[in-house]
Image (cartoon, rainbow over all chains, first blue to last red; front, side, top):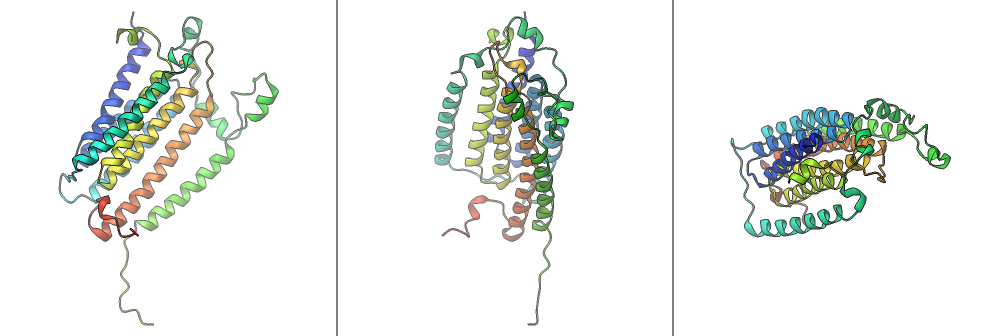
Length: 198
Length: 115
């Protein structure tokens, strides 16, 4: 009997990995941007499958909707021809592929090394894991400084350590403002100052 | 392959997807000469890290004795997404500035600061 959760995981995982490799091996920037959109959308599907519905929605909204539009604008503003190709020579490809494949081998063996990571929930845990609550409300409350998911933590020591995320949230807000001003300042059109009289 | 279809997925499967995205991003950063290609490699690397955070935060993927980091992983993934958007905006501004000055976005041409 087909486990539909595993089926959709396999589908999204294959799409994400295939288009991530397509981003690496294609030459034109426009195609790279399009493949990256598909890869990030499939990753959002993986997030939905892992019960992270709010993060998956934010991935679609901010990454696919915002960052990729930014990148496509960058491609359009810097294009010299319809399809700019910049060749990388074979030696560099060889070194990069050797380093990349050895890194991949290390990471995959590490991923299967721990016994409890290897198999998913079975029996009662599998049926209990299919109906989990939506995560938008706990994440919103955690960003406001209240951990509604941790109030029933039995260990008092652990409970005192589970504070909210109000300070990182404020830091990120100010950081976004600084980035907005800085990006607008960097990308402005400069006026040439000529015949300045001292 | 049939084993994958009938058994529930665990954390390891998500870690493999995250590893493939991460390595693709690293190779992309190393081999692309277009500055925007390097930027897309960075996006892939951050996305691979995000997949790992989500996998460890999800209680639905753990075995019976599994330990999930709970909501913390999802909040960190959200911060990563927001900071990646900010980083893309600044990197794009730098790229446009470089293009205005040099009429190319080949990163091999950006060697004026070479000592």
